[in-house]
Image 1 (cartoon, rainbow, N blue to C red):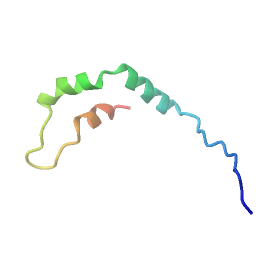
Image 2 (image 1 turned 60 degrees about the vertical axis):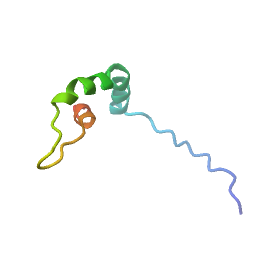
Image 3 (image 1 turned 90 degrees about the vertical axis):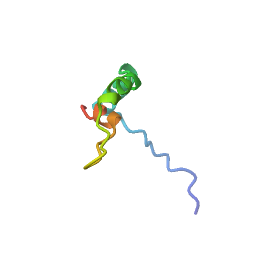
Image 4 (image 1 turned 45 degrees about the horizontal axis):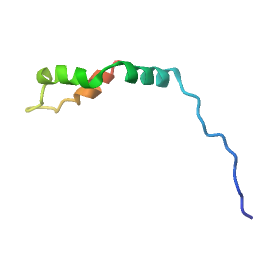
Length: 61
């Protein structure tokens, strides 16, 4: 017996956090911020390597 289609609606409603992150992506100039902060961000030559700069900028949410 073959099943042609399950007709499942797999579209998931967006959460407030997802909508907020999408709005932030449109509004915040991430490339400009990274370019501005990068000269002062630690490179991690000794010790534990730091998280990437973009990760640290986006952690706020």
